[in-house]
Length: 350
Image 1 (cartoon, rainbow, N blue to C red):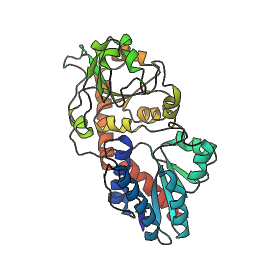
Image 2: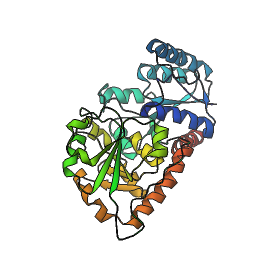
Image 3: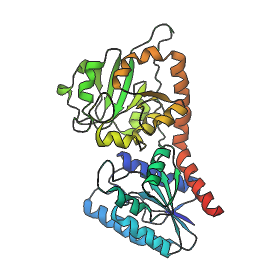
Image 4: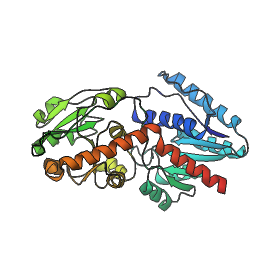
């Protein structure tokens, strides 16, 4: 029997919680997994949150029998090694799907500590081949595979956006969408960006944007916080931007370094919303964007002012068609189900 561990999430609006709850539903629906824990819940009280997650973790191992498979979503914080060890004592195998590496963005662990934790697993599903190589190079002994990209489950219909007018010789001013953390502390580049914009607008979705501090405020359309399902059905724009850090020239600091390894859930969010992606060329997901023809890779945000010269109406329509195809796959849970099924097949052969 195949199992996963659900948990109490303090709401499902954050990217991390949304991604994990999506995985639970996908593997149950497409791979025949069952929940070995308490049912998914969304209590916000800290004491209740802790108690329910602890109770679920303590209950889960007793569902396992020899030959079973347990899927864990990492990080599971301090419970991870305990659950892996208990599963092995019960004769089960452990498959770990990585959502976040604590040794990068949050610096909660050293690299050595992180690898030591992951080595409790039999199989590890990394975000992509670059993360897979990093794990291997740093001593991960578990068998490794790649997810490709995170799925994004939502029944919201897609809006219709056209980048060009019906006259092929006349291009309309296009709109670049940025959704996420808008405070200067997280993304200082937003507040310098306006000085380098002349041929497009930027539509911002999120909280804590200081409109009075941004340069070139006339280039920005601030929409505030919008629920994810409402965003998918109503977003007005032509590209979704994946960028982090303080610099216009490249993605810098811990967030920039992490982009070289991880799959930002934001990318899946844009694709599910029908938006072709603009992404930093050194980001790990740039290869996916390029190979699937779903967007544009750039070195600097300063490149965007001439983007309209590089992309014809036919080019954009081709990207849009590819994005709509990928959006359907993300809604169906294609990438998670494929990755998990491949691991299960390897286990059967072994």
